[in-house]
Length: 186
Image 1 (tube, rainbow, N blue to C red):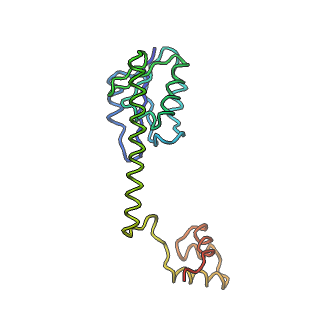
Image 2 (cartoon, rainbow, N blue to C red):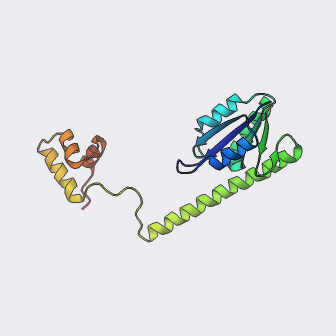
Image 3 (cartoon, helix red, strand yellow):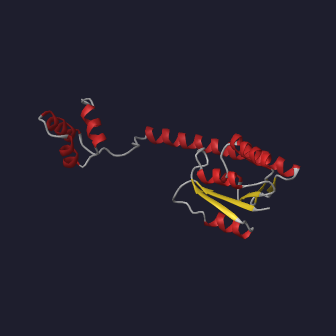
C-alpha cells in the first residue's frame, strides 16, 4: 500500500510549499505537483497520479478544491479511484472515503466547492461589468496609434516589405497583417 499525494495551485505565482509539506508530513510516499487551474481537464500531473495509483493505495490531498472545481469532476475522479480499489483522503476536511460517513461528507463538500466557484464567477462578471460601465478598458494597450496605423498602411501601399514594417514598428508578422486589414475607425 502506497500513500500518494497530489498538490495543485491555480497559477504559477502561487506556491505549492504548504500543501507539499503537509503531504510529506502525512507521510506520502510520492507527491505529484501541478500549477494548473482546477477547471481545466488538461492536468498532466493529475493524470499521471491517477494512472500511478494501484489497488490498496490511498490518494491524499490537503483540500477538496485542490483536486477539482466541479462536483461532476470530483465524483468522476472518485469513481475512477473506487474502480481501481484506491482509497481517498482529504487532510484539512478530515474526509476518508473508505467509510460511509466519509463518502457522505465528500458529496456535501464537493457541492459546496462547486457552489463557491459559481459565486466567485458571478462576482467577477459583476465586477467586470461595473468596471466597463465606469470606463475601464480591458485587454492589451494598442501598440500603434491610429496615425501610425495609417502610416503603416501607406508604407505598405508604397511597396515596403512586411519584414521591414515588422522591424520598423517592432510588431509581429500577424499583427502587421491584422493592422493592414483593419477598417478606418473614422
